[in-house]
Image 1 (tube, one colour):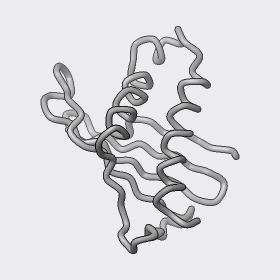
Image 2 (image 1 turned 30 degrees about the horizontal axis):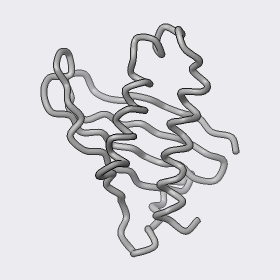
Image 3 (image 1 turned 120 degrees about the vertical axis):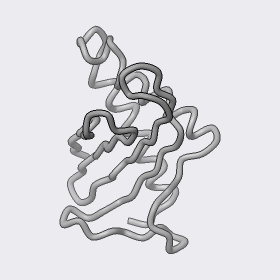
Length: 118
């Protein structure tokens, strides 16, 4: 499955980060909320995501709700994977970027599959 990953589309000095993963037939909008200043000490507070069609129509979850909040062990895993994508090594191509992106994509895709019926 082909995908395009758009990381950290945000306003400066904002505590909210928007990431988007675009697949062939749908896209996943991810919202990260941080505590603290983005310049210095930032702590990830929570992560939400929604699934949309390519023409921006929201797809409902199996239970009828729209968004998913990542909690518990999934939150810790997300924090680790997101940290890799925001790391110095990733930004300066000191590690295999494709592997890091695929780990992140596969994790999000597993959450999408478990919560949505596509």
